[in-house]
Each structure stands twice: as C-alpha cells, then as structure tokens.
Image (cartoon, rainbow, N blue to C red; front, top):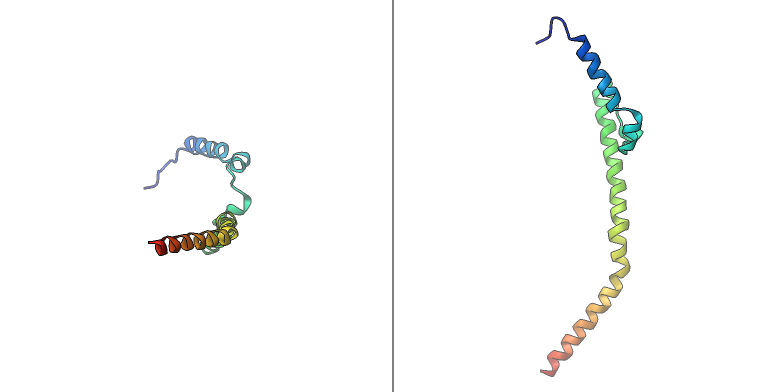
Length: 98
C-alpha cells in the first residue's frame, strides 16, 4: 500500500541515521572487510560471489582447524602408540602372573 505523499522528512532522517550507523570506520571496526561486502546489482552475480566467498572462507577455516588440532595430534601420535604398547605389555605381564 503506497503512500500518496511519502513522508520525505522521515525518509531523510532514516537515510542520515543509516549513513551514521554504516560509516566505513564502524564497518572496519566490526571486522567486515571489503572482500566480505557485496553489491546486489544483479541477483545471480551477487549470489555467486557470496557462494565463492563462503567456499574460500571454509577452506581457510578448515586449514586453520587442521593446523591447530590435527597436526599437533599427528606429532604426538607416535608417543601415544608407544604408551599404548607399554600398557598392553604391562597388562599381558599381569595376566601371565595370575
């Protein structure tokens, strides 16, 4: 339902509020990079850009996860395997004594 006479002053007020809320400095302080901003000039293009951005971020996050959790586990795996072997030998010796 369109207004016959739009409230121009209210529209101006909202535009000014948006301009203050979304300054480049505030956007930057939130950690939103230029790469994470998209213009919806063409829906298909915009959606494809967002998909591509998400896929790239998933790869980056996956690699960070691997670096933080997977690689350290690989580094201690031989130690864990050796400890397991020692415990199995100990248990075997105990069972043989019974």
